[in-house]
Length: 273
Image 1 (tube, helix red, strand yellow):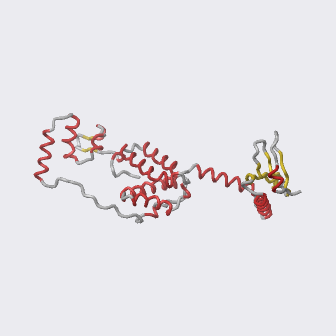
Image 2 (cartoon, rainbow, N blue to C red):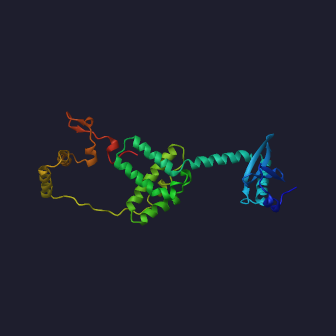
Image 3 (cartoon, rainbow, N blue to C red):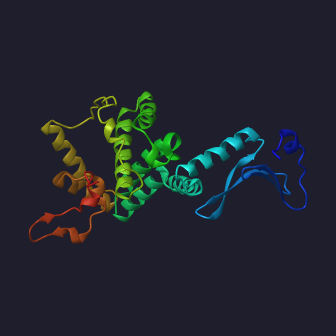
């Protein structure tokens, strides 16, 4: 005999779980904890299978019957609702394990293994931090261009145009890494090229007069502080490299016979992505 809402509400838990049958394979499982769960028994390919629909009262009696009828209709059409549910759960589990921030962390770890400069790694983590709140917990395969654009424009509205542009570039590298490792199918950040405001030009002070250059060189020669700093100051105007490239230089990079210094790509600012 079909169940009624009154019967379900009055069902009291006991020491052992028990079922209240509604018919057509649908029943309500009452556990000792008081939880009341909807289950549906189906016979698929000669084997008895079971589907769980949810709990009462979150799912009403009417909704549970509708879910039972949908499952039976799917079977009549040649489908397997139990297998479909398993695939959906598996897909949800895979998506949950491929969050944007997880893939981004893996991408940064790859760059660490490739001996990228600490300063650059710090920047990569900064860009990731800019994206953690808006999309970090989202499955990377589900992030849309508009979703990412909203996150970037939030940075832009603070007046940080250059940061917004570089964060987009970082996101693009993470998505491309995700495509390469089968976690997503496309790079939505690529579609946003040109969508952000161009950074405002910023001029930096520079010595352009030869007399001033001479004064600088004489000041460097007169410096008698910490010896490594003194020698670094004297070398820099002659080789025009960045301080970090000089500071991390190793003897194996120099060919003194040919007067050649070959800096590894991983330590250059314009490194390969």
